[in-house]
Image (cartoon, rainbow, N blue to C red; front, side, top):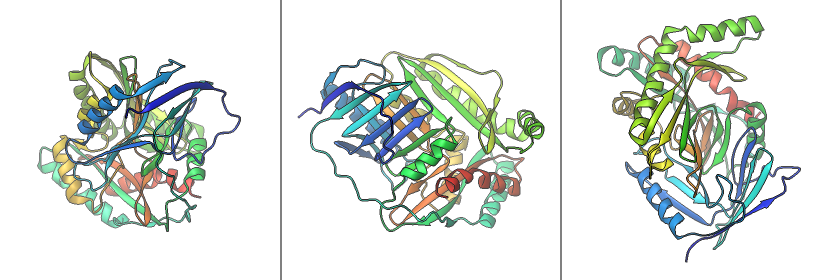
Length: 394
């Protein structure tokens, strides 16, 4: 029986229901979803291709009554894809029972028929993060080891993470944490999809009417409290050899991987400093025109993982991450976001947050390691990046 989809215009609500089971929002765009009517899971090397194929089959068979006909309307699915092909965590794509979409003051609701998957009872977590499987000293040791490997091999960059954990007794209620993240980081993509949540500063890929765009972030510095000092930090970041080295790898990798899927690809000639409440990032915007018949997930299957979250060369970096990190990243640093049956969609990289595990929340923070990296500086960078998740649960 085909999935029945109804899309209708609704009034923008005076208050938003942040208890929604799934959230994806940034500035004037919000997606708030409840329940599930259909879930697809995939594992292994071909997980993204499998999700893409099943998504195409779903769209082809869906019975859609679209009274809105706006870009991004129709069947809407949410997705969270594991970082590693070897992850024990599933990559998921699911269609919510109801989805409220608000874009620049215009709202519509998507209702999907068939039986719904019941919501799970939740409980507000304690808010206390403890040291995880990788201590601060162990992380510094891994940075030293990585720098040594980079100096002796063809590896140019590897992105290492460290973790914090928060014990939980049941599924956590993230509504307050998500609201805090959105309020503090309105320019980031705030998300709670599947088992991942956070406020990511990095867009992996957006598609609208065949046009794709991405923002590459690599290279980080802490904000200054004095305006003149803060401006000097931003200027210094642009001219930092270590940070430009790291950023150039990530930007070049994005362009090279987009080119086979696009008629044309364009990128900023120089990176710019992007300001967030706690950090400066080096950023480069990339744009392209998709070839006929290419979908967003088709491109994602080739893009992920980017140099910004894995390293360069990609295979060598992934092998070293698997060897050094003592945990499964699951959906951390993987693609997370939404897709629409009209080909539109928006996928961020799951950063500045965590992953819900069976009896704990595991928060992650990572940084790019190159030959010039200093272990203490990289540890300090992870502490800066943990500010987001600590704030969310404070």
